[in-house]
Image 1 (cartoon, rainbow, N blue to C red):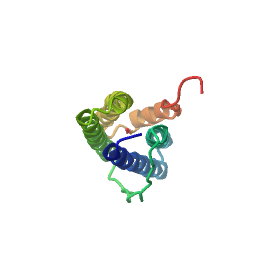
Image 2 (spheres, protein in one colour):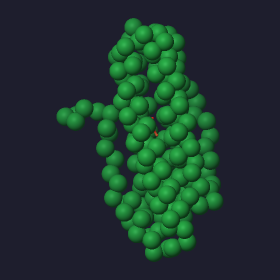
Image 3 (cartoon, rainbow, N blue to C red):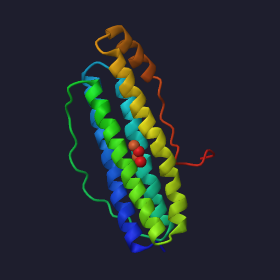
Amino acid sequence: MINERMQKEINEQINAELWSGYLYLSMSSWFTQNNLPGFANWMYVQYQEEFTHAMKMYRYIHERGGVVTLKPIAAVDTDWKNGVAIFEQTLNHERKVTGLINALMDTAHEIRDYATINFLNWYIDEQVEEEANAEELLHKLQMIGNDQAALYNLDNELSTRVFVDATLPAAE
Ligand code: OFO
């Protein structure tokens, strides 16, 4: 049986992961509306990934005999100045999520919930990648500036990103 405080905090994180997905879906929509289908695809995959991050926690609470509590998802931004502004927000947001995961880990250590420590390690690793991806694309966009040909090429490159549910065992 999962500890009640741990359960409450993981439930809050489920909401945060769903909110992240909602934010990235809104960003994907912005890119579609602004004729950057490759960036829209990249953000759409990001949205799909966030929902799997939430579902991994959802399954974990059930596995531990707990109760999942789904709360309303708060509104997200719908308009940005440009792609750089989107990736600045993405990077800041991912840094914030890293802080939230670290806080969950602090709780797990405090209450000596070893199963949850083990479970959260996946998210600790994932956040390293999430921050690195956002940072890389932000730097690329900053370098590109007003170079439309370079933007076109990067957009093409991002159209190849494919969603894979990394939270499931490879055989599933
Ligand atoms: Fe963007 O990463 Fe979830 O946790």
